[in-house]
Image (cartoon, rainbow, N blue to C red):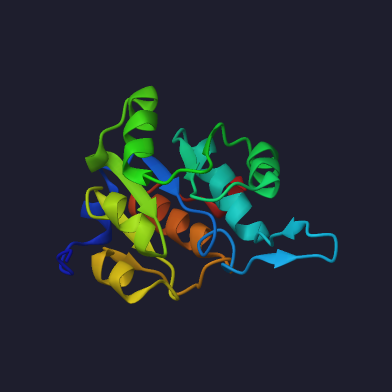
Length: 174
């Protein structure tokens, strides 16, 4: 369990990159199928702006998800996210493959996750973040538990908190 006395600044300063789950973090976790069997997802516009601001500040953002979905790829393209790993059963292994391309180590990673498959990464990174409605075990492993639930601006909240702690937040640059 992370030390709750760690300040935002001390946790945020070493962070150089963000990796995030999708379902339950960037979405509310529901999987909806239409009558033809096509899957739909809802993404929050504020998360998108937060991701763009993070990348505009010079930091990489990547997605690691266990599921495969064309909507995830489409959203990543819209936002300019180049590192998207879908169908990742072992998220830690996938993270270890991505990080060298960014010149990052686990200690400089913020990982945002909401459920048990995220724990292997969350327990090894510099900053583990969970949406308000994350599974209990995930909240127990998180340094930060957000006010926003998954799919309702949780990613934006985490990014804004990171950038503010790093004194890189400027609402006028959006």
